[in-house]
Structures are given as C-alpha cells and as structure tokens.
Length: 191
Image 1 (cartoon, rainbow, N blue to C red):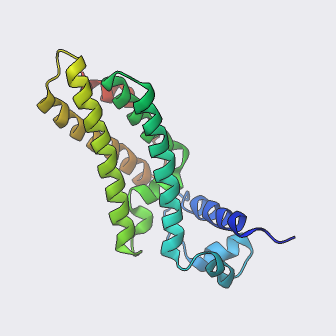
Image 2: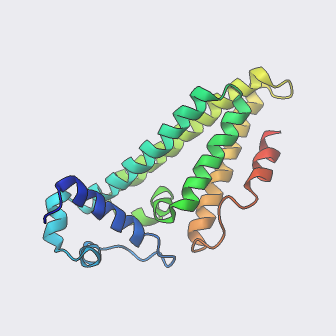
C-alpha cells in the first residue's frame, strides 16, 4: 500500500530530524536520508524540490510549535515575569526534547546549506526576543523593582543566555541538558 504524499513528507522530515540527533553532527546527505528511509533519492525529490525545502519543513515545525505555545502563554498569563519564565522554559524544554531540531535552530545543521535558512532561524530568534521584550515591558508596569530600560536589557541578556545554553547543548554532543540549572539563571537575570 502506497503512502499518501503528506504522510511520506512527514516521514521524510521525521527521518531527517532523527539523523540530526547524532551527537557527532555529521552532515546529512540526501543519499543517506534516502537509504535510511529505504527509498531512492528520486523519491525524496518527488516530495521536496530540494534539500533546503526539507530544512524549511523542519523550520516551519519549529516556528509553528514554539510560537503556538508562546501565543497561548501570552494570552493566558497576565504577569509579565511569568510569561518570560514560561517562554524560557518552553524554548529550552523544546531544545532538550528535540536535539535534531536544536541543531537546526542553532545553525549547526545549516552549514553549507542555503543561507536563507540561517537567516530564517535568525528571524525566529529575533521574534522570540521581541516577545520576551514585550513581556518584560509588561513586567516593568507590574513590578516596582523593574524599569522599562532595565526590562529591555534583561530580555536581551536572557535571550543570549538561552542561546548559549542551546549552543552548549549542541556543541557538547547533547550531553548537558539545556534545562539543567536554568531556573536559577533565569531568576538571577530577572530578579
């Protein structure tokens, strides 16, 4: 029985993400991906016009998953500091559960790929930081010890901390979970 196109595309993206979870960080080729799936390279290209399009599929998954939850956090949580803490936990929790996707997020898997893919991930992090900044501005109206200028600086510092934790997770072969000791650092930056 043949798989439907949408199912096969999903299967290809899942296999690509799994291959990116290898701690050695070897470049994933379309030949290796096709071999893992037991199909020909031509079959891959029936579903995706290019390898870059496969990575775009992973990036879309990251964006929709993360921003879908971020939007719910911002809608349901009235306190700015709680929004920031929940977003930080979300981002690092996602990274920990999806090491292959984290390699994409940090650009490690995008080396030698189309530069627009890295640009798109940079835009993703810019949007996350903007959301953190908005939440910190809200917190500045709610917390007497915060002023708006400090809130903006703290959101930038927190974003750099989150990026550093994810980079260390990838560069360390996924040995140290990005959530380990995270809450203490987030509290130190925010409070």
